[in-house]
Length: 252
Image (tube, rainbow, N blue to C red):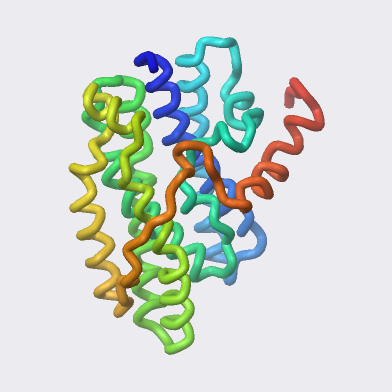
């Protein structure tokens, strides 16, 4: 594995997380529980798509095959996507969406904060541009975890159920693969082992305020970073890739 290939795959991992979660959140557009939250989730989706665009553009340059950011983003096979399994999980209901967002945001904030110190100037610049958005994302999802967890009996039960069901996907966020390790060693990527305590502390803090119980099951799902996805991924891609595959090389 060359340094160029490792960097390409690493940038894809970061970009795919934003791309797929942005696609998932975009499904709420026009379907939110109230107008304000419909707009809020749509705006977060747009933030994530903007981050994905910057990363896909950089990935295309690293690859050096003349592909555009759109081709990198939309014209890969399922096993070529490197996003973690958490972000591809279905919305189900508002509680599931908030828990998925909170678990990802708790990771994403400290991850991007670490990338501010990257020796790769492009990644550091993307992180600097994104960190304010991500700080808001974490604030938004944290407040809703607390509001639902410490709310009514019904809201508490729903958010606890969502947390119990999605918890097994949270471990992959801080489990390094070969690209994570190589980029961290080179001073380019975030050291997942170093930021893991801060992430765990943040999650524990919010769950305590929200009167939610940390799930007892410590077994975690994995495979997304290696291109092994859940059945949900195929449905996401069939919708997300339709336009690009139906009308090849189209231009707006």
